[in-house]
Image (cartoon, rainbow over all chains, first blue to last red; front, side, top):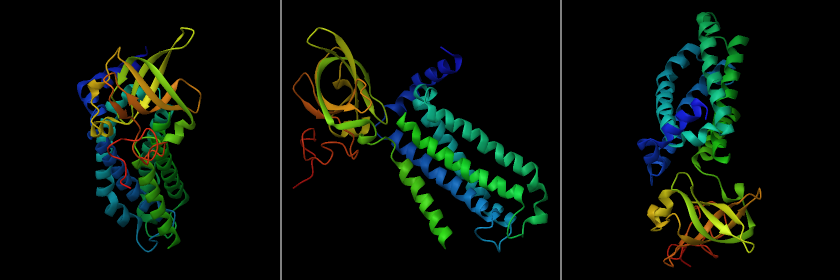
Length: 163
Length: 147
């Protein structure tokens, strides 16, 4: 058995993992919290992305919007991450071989890389373009990538139940 | 305005699609292929979002086939008075269900009859499968809709 699979099995067999998996209500409550956190995270990110694409709130500067949504985005991320870990705890051994889960992990890695590149490149000169109705193409590309990748994460996450 | 309604729609879609923690009946099973299994329990998985148990079924020629039976999650089964310990390894049970679309040895267990004669509804509530609305066989005997 590959090491990673073995680790997943140990996590799966753990007391807490089993308790969540066999619970009457905890599992479905954690799932709901996970979904709500995703809407908070992706919803607020989408506002910034759509603004950079020049589709909404064109009269408001990009930095003002990014500062406004920032605490909501990170609150959503924290709750999403913790609840996601709890769900993985309960299903690790099944997730390991689940193709949708694997796709989701790859997409999550890419969706994390995207803002990393964005913030170390074009966003450094944001004061030059923050009030433009349409952001420079690099920012628009990052915005589009963000919208597509997050959509992919949600679809892949949903698909885990079907494999 | 168009974009706002699109965003609202996308948001609503994200919520509804992910709110169903489990898949529907028709995603995996065929309502036109009922099957009755009589066999010995070999494994029980009392798990979210679906429970599974496995039975060894012996056919007329004596060949043994291990069938997987899928049921609702622990929460829904508990509400019907079904407890984790009700299924014991080695017990012979009767499972009335529907076969998987892919032809594998997997059934959606709509009704399970335990060795003590107790008959429990195993289906997932609201999954759209046969008996889901409490009208036909396999429905819960005490919690169907009032007519």
